[in-house]
Image 1 (cartoon, rainbow, N blue to C red):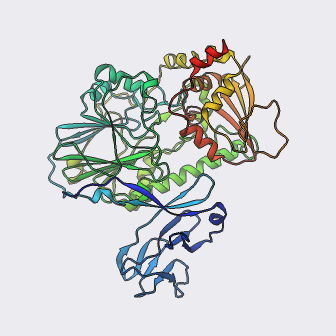
Image 2 (cartoon, rainbow, N blue to C red; image 1 turned 45 degrees about the vertical axis):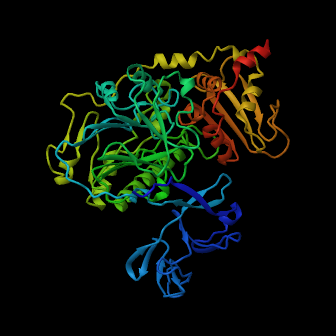
Image 3 (cartoon, rainbow, N blue to C red; image 1 turned 90 degrees about the horizontal axis):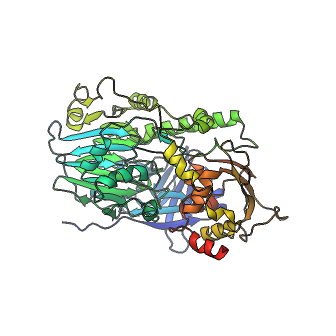
Length: 578
């Protein structure tokens, strides 16, 4: 048997922000001066594609094709093979090859990186041909949001169990009512896959319930730069069987079942997706990945599932000032949701799965204080996406309802089989109409009166711990009440990240400026426990203004992903405060 090698990424070319800005529309020929390697980059309005400047036939060098009036093709100097760089398909000889694409990423300063995944298609190692499936042998039951319960022969596997409580502090709540037996289903699972650390996928309230019954349940996560369970000890949840697996290597469960975790091309430090294969039939779950596996994915899988909804960001709903009028926000949200729908439909058309299921977007901003967000943050309709897919392909689609079960064998044999999808019994509650807010809000509110915040020096202690500095940005932080008005007795302060100082007034030098208003219960809970700022930003617990209107990637990326793995030492801090 061939030895599997963990999938890695290699940076082949770096373009500075200036070089990236100078790229022209159409074909660009580039060279890495250090290595002497040549590349081709094709820039269009919607995307950037890149490949090595090397013909697949016999390794010849491509040059501009003077016969191509559209400016999309290059010609090989050896045998005149022609490559359409806009599609990465060879047009001469027609129908021959596709060019291997490189991953194109924007770095933290708006430069461009060309990356190569190695191996690019790791699922092709040790290939298996699909075998016969008996009716009922493979069943997929939707529980809620991104949580699926898979029956695979005599094994059970669960994806991303968020089945109780909120996500992102108090900003997200479940849209669908999970089946009443959800905890029993989790306890009966042979393994659980958790895709990433966001709390609508890694739900500590859910895992606390599970750990009370079965603390040794096997849980599998990818080997991300920031560990998925980085906050396990702080959470108090007792789980004893967490397995971190390398990317791009088949994990054998039994003779028929294996799975492979892949990294995201845009957020490899935290996001993953998964391929599950049973008797040669593949199930692809891209979860929340922006560009799963750098855009290279298996085609013609039995079942594909992905996110679809949009709205998983504080932008632009929580912004004000300047262009951020209600009319501008509404138009932006409408346009972005349409782009996402079209992208997902195009991806499904390209990959041609037998069946497609939109999931991982069924959340609602149900707390009364977030009424504005709920009304503004319009999300995509899964049925609209499925109708768009059916217009352009023969892919069968499934809009799941809690407790509905898809029988893979029946659906692959005959998508019209009335027993292919078993809907929940008539009268089953589909949508939640009440949420138990109080226990979770009490946890947040407990931080408001903590002794830490009796001493204003906590501000310096916290931001020194956070470790972000040497960046020309001044931020005003304002603690607020529920309505984002200043909290009586709350803190209102400036942080100058150029030298990590805390001035009374804004400095006289030229500097970008952001004002961040945060609900006092959430910001103090985040500060006290050393949590990531996703609870604030993705959870809609802030209101922001910025001048100029620039997204400071380095700042937000640090506070959302790169904070220290252990919380501030507040015990030592309080001892020194005396």
